[in-house]
Length: 346
Image (cartoon, rainbow, N blue to C red; front, side, top):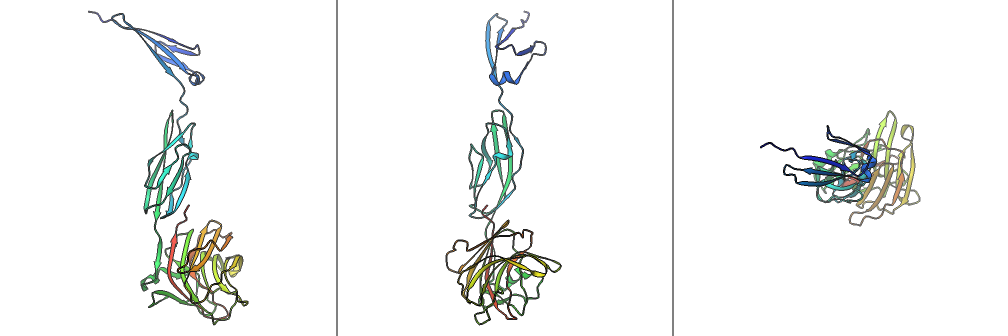
């Protein structure tokens, strides 16, 4: 019995379409696809039975693609931030989802906004975002690192190796049996601290006290936390957040930066905070880009709002750490129990 080849006839609903029966290919414009295109296939089989199939086609749009990047993130534990992912994808009518993400990461399907709550410590955990439309999908991955508090606790004398000074004649820290580090400044030695665990911009906390109630008050600084400190020849660079007492009896918290040759400085902001000598205080200093903030409060007290805020022009990298500036050839004493670094929340 001879095989019978099925008969195929084709019709379509628009004249803006060409069909090549040899190649069995349609050629059509995107305008046709946008409005929709239907093809009727009429097939007669070997038994002369006829079936009609209706096929439709339309333009689904342009497949999304990645056109940008997202920097890897580093947060402190408990920090929170949001990342806009939509700008890194091209395409229309996109929806967004997470292909991979650690606990505490969520995404808005309509906007692509990723919200991150740093609930646990992580090391370069991948966050993969998918953008999808009817034509296809594209993905982009960035990483999240979450760190706990980076700290030096001076209960042990071995912790003294974490702190030194940047280009200074000041004496070294010594360890006190009470469980803290002690620095006795001498003469006019300027002591810019260099803490080995410092990690650039972030929130620094220092639990410290300083003595000097019997010394002559002046605008020279008894105790400070220095940030981004460096030196080129005789020119210092950097920022200081410092405490001092004036001859009028005011006790202040002050932000100052180096502004010129051979240690010239300028005042950026100052405020009276009413601190006492021989009392343990937390000094918090936040450095973020051109923003500098400081606050001083008792060891067991609640952290207040930022008491002194300034904008700095010093943005180059440098050393971070505690130190001090003796006045009038006098020798104030600085004690430190603990140093902490917290990455910025965003």
